[in-house]
Image (cartoon, rainbow, N blue to C red; front, side):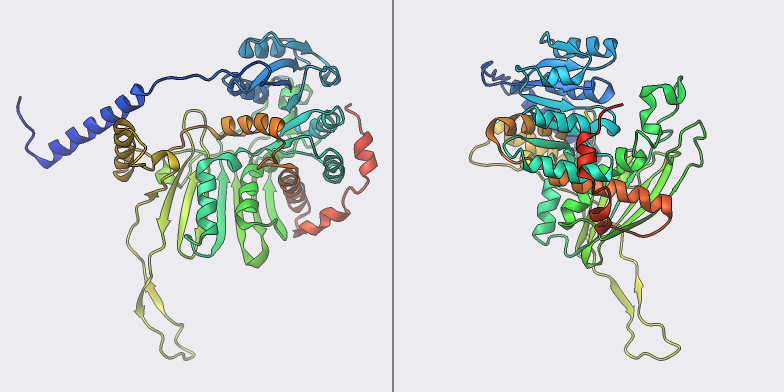
Length: 464
């Protein structure tokens, strides 16, 4: 067999060998499925079996820590489809209150339209159920105050909101980098979620419940559906909620009967002068981060010593992140003296940078404990990352992690990473951001204290 003599050929051979080695190592590990006893499984019900509810059920069906015993939806076809996904012969309800009255149900997951998040969550807590509600947690200002008061009255029940970035290994790793000063003083963040075309009007117009995201009386628009995820990351990383928000929204492209904005631009000012800029548009999905290898959504965290670009991904493209060290600027013409005609120093641009993969525990080699194949698999992946052949990715979708955490916390009583205060802070940002755009002014977050203070009205409000 002829040997490869050129460096290019040897390099290509080594790449192929390492890719095969990584695949072989992954395939050699024994597939061990730990099945929990039925008595240990959390018996849960799902309220809302539309697109999001079905998505969650697809993930839950692969977990042995919970068992679906009940489903609820107004649409019989959606109910039947969801039952086929979970394959546990769940009870089917059309009225969610009947599901809440079911004594077999220990925990409830809520994936209904935003405008009914609060009443279903409220009734679930009152029924004594552990509760998971998709974001945004609440829709109106009075619901912020009412749910905070109600949650305080039910401290033994788990209440978690669906903000899965807090359950991502990469997002947690970057938080640790910030806390340990690796990025220096983090002063700015930029986030985007760009789609093309985004949500479009389906037959039935406003009377079609599948279009609820397009109308103000049922939806918080792009701010609630998209920005809420990334604003939560800024709250988490900066360790505070914003002081105020300004923004501009427009209904400029999709004149199909909707009344929500089809593009928004927001600026959040946090304590110590820190800023988050946010953009959501529906005319181009390009992402100018992560070497443009991912579309739609991403976040860049910018500090005085470096920056990180990251993306939470999906089932098919898991979370990833790249770290860029801040180069020292080169001083070209020092301003030793200032006069009226001298503007000051000028700087030369630093050279191009290549993103550095952030190594998570899954790629750290334990030379004492890892088997030969495990070590070689990790080293192969790291080599591929270093060459830019692959973007580093998490081992799992954070949606799986957040759902498993909810089921576990329902048993142990541990406080969720995305707890009620995280959810309410995020919902407050959504509510006030929409006011800022509608009224064209700077809206202070302290204004929530005087908005919707009639808690009793929220507690007694019924679904129309």
